[in-house]
Length: 120
Image (cartoon, rainbow, N blue to C red):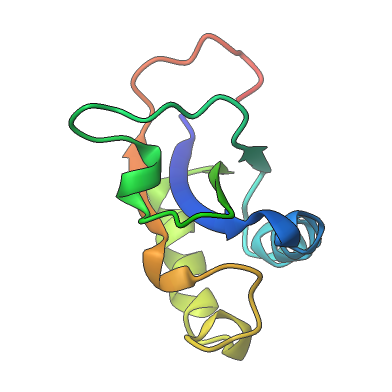
């Protein structure tokens, strides 16, 4: 079964197109290291919660939108090996030219529990 790496980030509204290009370019690199699929979602209906919510999770500021994304890997082992290589890449280092503040991005790896899509 696949392994999922999920992300939530705050992206300035003005950087939507730059973020789209950044994600597309990054996927080519992830794909070279074994990723099979990437989904990037631009917040459309992201309500404020009473206790917590997506915006607070990434400390989204006025003029920023929330992006919810995931990468599909064949296994956790493939993801871990890829991340080791990716973290050595200068483009992945803090201060790299990214269209969002990577310090406020949250991410994690997830074992698939239920998958109703036989293609994933």
